[in-house]
Length: 123
Image (cartoon, rainbow, N blue to C red; front, side, top):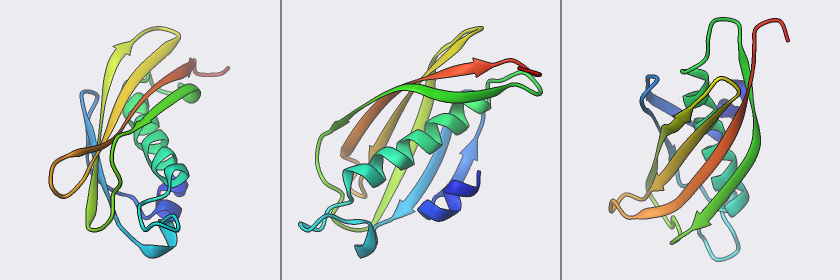
């Protein structure tokens, strides 16, 4: 996914059951207070969640986000953030993915739940 390059996202592993990625804290990705910007965190979560959904698609099918909700629990102020996405529902027309962003200290910084529409091959 080309947008992952723009985000500085590194995919560590990807399977239908779990996708793991990471991003490095960088000043240009932060708010005035020094934490990773919420919009950046949401873009990262959406991208990793979409990759997780894609791992569960039939050949030739596609997906797009139709709903997303993020809870911001604490800031990422430095270091590497780990992003883990797991599917909680894989259906014929939708896939629901839960993505967590973890700080270096193992504490959850954000939790995103998103619904991906499944677009069958040829649609």
